[in-house]
Structure formats: structure tokens, C-alpha cells
Image 1 (cartoon, rainbow, N blue to C red):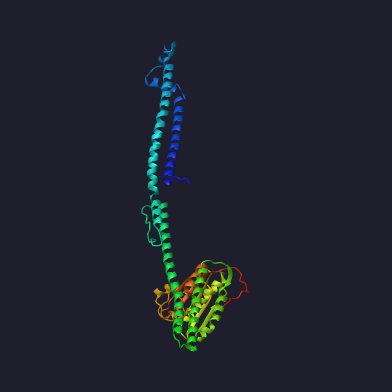
Image 2: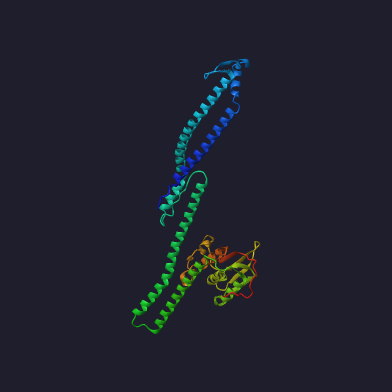
Length: 403
């Protein structure tokens, strides 16, 4: 494959060629203008010279011997000399100017080579950093100094991209580590139960039943983690764009969790106004389900869970779920939406939580163009508010939430 010249060489050749063409045009224009001015009135220079020398018209009309023989006036002789001088000057000018153009073009090529190298130095720095990049060196930055021109903007954009890549790699490593741990723990539980049961020769039917129940619980936990990981993966791309009544979805989710709430003595206080959003109904159901499930799981027994759906002044649909519970530090609230994050013992593994519920809520809200926020009241509990863009599309009354 034929190697293409470097960008620096191509820029240098372009500078030199441009300088040569412009210089040639300027010299040609100067030559034509000089020639036009010099020969526009062939006798004007002779007459002007005679006036400067105070020669009278009579003197100019006097005849003198011509070198070629015969007689001619002084004025005619001066015009001949003028024509000859102009011809020699123009002839000499052509040679001198072309030599000057050649030298100037050579100087422009050298200067263009230096200038191109200087201008491309930031690009070389970007290329050098890019060549050194790997998963372990994403912390490096170009940090280009100088004026905020296009190259500085390119370097800053590259640095910002490196920052996002570094954060993504860190999040990916943490996610893989946490996911592996979450999936390995149920397997370890099942293996321990099997080993202990099989190692005891006097294992009874009750022991076997206890082992089976433990293994079943571990399998259910693994399925729950896998299901939530799949939801997170699916929430990265919004496939369906239907008009969904979020109020109807929330009411269906509340009805689905009514039995679990009754078992803990919890009451629901629902305020739902028909509110249309454009998106994937299955994902929106999972969003509402995770919010209500989180509230039911960690609310204080005998308390009230508030579920409200409505619109704000900006025509956004707002879903708000509030519950009474343990006191949470305001600084800890943003971490509740991180994947696999659990706080204290109230959200430990024995509650069955995987630390993915609110992370799914944040991911689904984001893919729908919305946002999620949390608030920790001073007297305890958690208030989660999801804000989604409203939709003016008509709702399909035949669609009901599949809680």
C-alpha cells in the first residue's frame, strides 16, 4: 500500500504552492501595470525631461545626425532612448522578479514547514496520549496550555472524553465485581447446605426439607438479581414509545403490593390523576413497582405509604412515593440510587434486597428523558420523586397495567 505523505508535508507544500501562485500573479500584474504606464504616452517622458532641463521647443526641433544615418530631431532621439531604456528595464525586471519569486517561495516552504510543525504540535500531543491509553492509564490528560483556539477545544474535549471513559471503566469494574459477588453468594449458600446435609449420615427428612427451602430461597434470590440486571440492560435503550397513563400504572402496582403491606400493617394513601407519558409501559411498571416495593420493604410497621401521581407547572408528570422509616443522612441519599448500594443493617441481605431497586428507577427515568431525586425527612423515612416529560398523545383505555 502506497504510503501517504504526512499532514505536515502536505500543509507545507500547500503553503509553498499558494505563495508561489499568489506571488506570480502579483508580479505579472505589476509587470503589466508598469508596461502600461511606461508606454501609454511614448513622448511624455521625453517632453517632461526636456522641461526639467529647461530645453526649449525650438531646441527639440533642431536636427542632429542619427547614428544610423540621416537627420532627426532631439525630441525624436530622446523618445528612442526612452523606448530602449523601458525595454531593457522590463527585460531585466522579468529575470530579477522570477529569481526573487523562487527564493521567496523557498523561504515560504521552510517557514511553512516550521509553522505547520508548530501548529500540529498539539495534535501530536493528543496522538501521543491516545497511543499510551489503556484501561490502566485512563487517568492521563493532555491538559493543553495556550489560547482557547480550535486545538485547545479539541484537547479539552478529548480530556473530557477520557474522564467519561475512566468513570465508565471504574463503574464497570465495580458493577462486575458486585454482580459477581451477588451471584456467587447464593451459590455458596447452596453448596454449603448440600455439603453439610450430605456429610451427615443421619440426615432426616426435616433436614432435607430445610436444605430444600434454603436452596429454593437462594435460587429465588439469584433469579431476582439476574432479572434486575436484565432490566438495567434493557433500560439503556427505549424500544417502545406508547402513551402510558402513569396514574393507572401506579394504582395497579399499589394493588399488587396490598397483601405484603397488610402483612406489615401498612396503609397506602394514593392520589393519582390521569397523567400521560410517552415510553415503554413495562419499564414504567418496573419503575413504579420498585419504588412501592422499596417503600413497603423499609417502612416502619403500622405507618402510611404515600403514592401520588400528577403534573407540575411545566407539564411534566411527577410520581412521588414517601414512607416513614429509619433516619437517613442527606449526604447518603444520592448513594441510594447507585447499583448494589445498601445502607446499614436495614438494607442488608437478610431483607432480600439486592441494592438494585432504586438504581433501576434512576436508569428507567433517565432513558425516558426524566430525572429522579430523593429526600430524607428529618424525622426519618425517604421521599423519592420521579419527574418525566408529559405526553399529549391520547391514551388507550383498553390498556391496563399488568401488575
